Figure 1 (cartoon, chains in turn brown, yellow):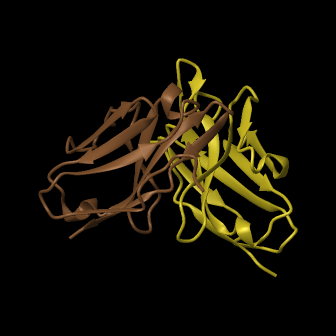
Figure 2: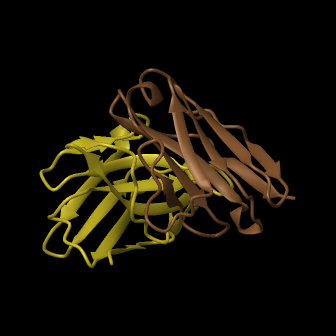
Length: 109
Length: 123
């Protein structure tokens, strides 16, 4: 049972826009930055979105993040086949621990 | 460009201690960043284990705190993970990673990752 709640799966067709939600509480998302990670099959996770909505260098602008209250979202526009991966949200919790969402498996149909 | 590489036994017996080392190249661990460990059981999600700063400041996952020790070896530019009294539930891919701060406050910004190493707990 993860501290942050994500839907286990999401899907879309090429070119579509998909969103992935991440729900937490006032002790984590509500009081700190949210980060998003992309994990391609067989690879280590990669930082995709930092500080709620900032893209690290090299991340396409098709990826965007937002946060409101105790929830956050990752949006992917212009969906491409190479976006098929697992996506995780993460935040620091007031109990002095890093917490992750359970992950969302994105399928490009 | 910073690179991280995990090393250690791929098989550990139940009740024994899991020991892993992360060797960092291209950056001194005496500089910024917390140095951390994250694991992923086969087919499951990510779990943060803990991290340590050069000052000795350390944070551990409360669910693992009683069994975990993270340490830094600045002379070798390495940091290590020890997890004792392991069970099959500790079978996972273990990643080492940098953990960044914002205005001195720790975050969950894991900027650089090792490739991961699978550790199986079995007799």
